[in-house]
Length: 395
Image 1 (cartoon, helix red, strand yellow):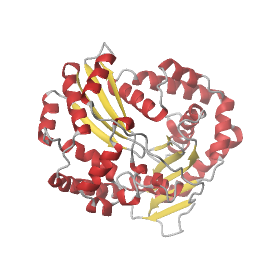
Image 2 (cartoon, rainbow, N blue to C red):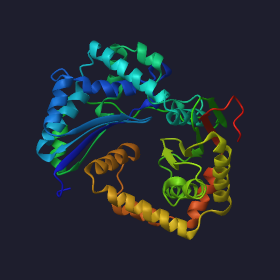
Image 3 (cartoon, rainbow, N blue to C red):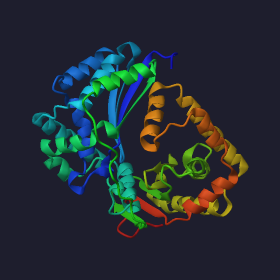
Image 4 (cartoon, rainbow, N blue to C red):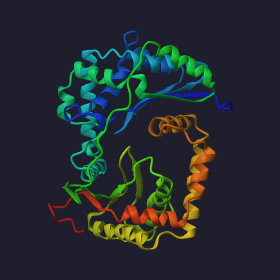
């Protein structure tokens, strides 16, 4: 991106919360925090000051299948960015006193999450959709594991998963590919091995209903189904279906639930895709007295999409939105870095922008109807958090 002044570089590690045993639940997220606490040659303050001094932005996040570390800064300081990222991913100090300090931070993060019913209902939905499987477990992990885990266990997890064979480096901005490749090769010299973790797919069973009584002002609902895995050839048709259902301002649910009836401030649908499974779900918060009506409207749209599919106009709007969303993201170095990093790690290749646009443009009304019949006819799962006694949700 020669027209920009910045560089965004990220390291994508192909391990997330689904790759933990029950005794390790939360280690991936814990480790994400700890890597920024310093290395043998840099303290946490050294890292923070170095990035702050050049106006950089440094962060990380953990998902169910990968952990990402990234740094965005001016191109003139890109060597500093490579130095810091490669240093923390090669030689984290993992000092016991820093682990204990960060342990409390993470416990506070878990407590904050549990105080947010909109977050809790998402967790409950995942647990019902993938019962007794790591995909149904919250990324933050279990408090009892976070409280008891020590340096030895975290170091062991790092040594197994944080190896070059399980990493992708992505960069976008005012950079040259060969120069970046040489810098990464030099900084990771002498470190080898590793590979993608071995995973077990979730079983077919789901829990159809999850109700949690909570003294909230709103009822929080998530209603959805299993969906195809990330490499499915149907993924572009599914993205189009998602936008028509609840992915945009003109979507069926936004129009019917918010615009026409005023039953919610916000309602939307989202899809996630994992290595061997996926989900399509609608999320909404509404007054408890309106919960049954909102649920009936969501169910009705699922049924209508299965029976009748979508209209040519709905398809046109959705495809144009997806096209514009992709093209607008190309203006940002961070978004470009994320696109190529995630593509290479999760798919093994990076589709060109032209290939992406061709895939979106080739979706037909019949394609969307076919994926709607397949996906929305699956067993449907409802998770609710709100002021309802057990088995008294009016839906």
